[in-house]
Image (tube, rainbow, N blue to C red; front, top):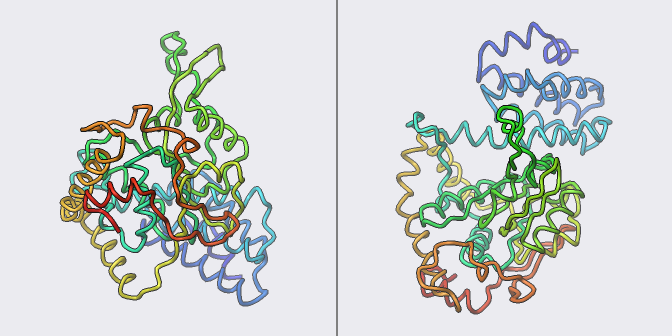
Length: 399
């Protein structure tokens, strides 16, 4: 078969990879063609798709080589194979499908990084798509802004279609908050993270090199007084869900392991996103979110055209695009600060999120927004508590 003679032919593969970005794109296009044949005929042996998955995506060395040239094409390959398995086009082992999902998730950052490198690469920083330039997801943006203004709202759950800029919007929020001088880091919790990475563990380098017993903070420490973001939250391992529930309820992370006993504050705004068609969200975790929005694919042709235009402009000149939107992001950041100061009971000039009043339990001061069902029911329109409507109105952000 042509697909096997090319995709699984080392000589053809190596010849394609010699062409860098375009060569990897050709490999992904060949898999697209195979997917099309599998979807419309019965001529594609499922074992061929499994062989492709293991050869290109589960082979760490080859995958990293390809991703270094064209991460978007490699991610598309992973998504294609997962989609084929979900449609029953091949009888894929469940563990293999989960591995492919994990690969696709880890490639998200590589895709963003390739498009986002600043023109002044010497700075070592990556440009982030501006928050103000994101179109069509106004409820999600509003929910994030409300939580930045008052973390006591209790976070946000954003369920909906793939490819609707959920991850991009959350990352953009972090950049915009830095313009406001707010110490609210945005930390991503990967699906495959170990409990050591989440909770923290013994610093092995300090132990082996210096003979010191030192604590290496985990993601919960990094997210303290900021946002902890979980993409595909409905696919999160049950063990990690239990850990998050314990820490979110107490605001404290206590670590006992490797001869260490460490306790530190862990107040964070929990933000989760995902596609409800891929799995249900545990009710205990769903109850931890104060607000919920349903994120839908943009259907309006003019809006979609403008989204594509902005994304292309950003890819061509990240630094110039960010500079063009800097004023809008800075103005929005200033209004967020003004809204924080105008909330009832707030202290004037409040710029830090570490105060206990900012993290009051949602059980003590509930928001009136309603949560959506993780079983795919659309969330109702996001509604604001009266205090937040007043704060936003006086800062120029009422809807």
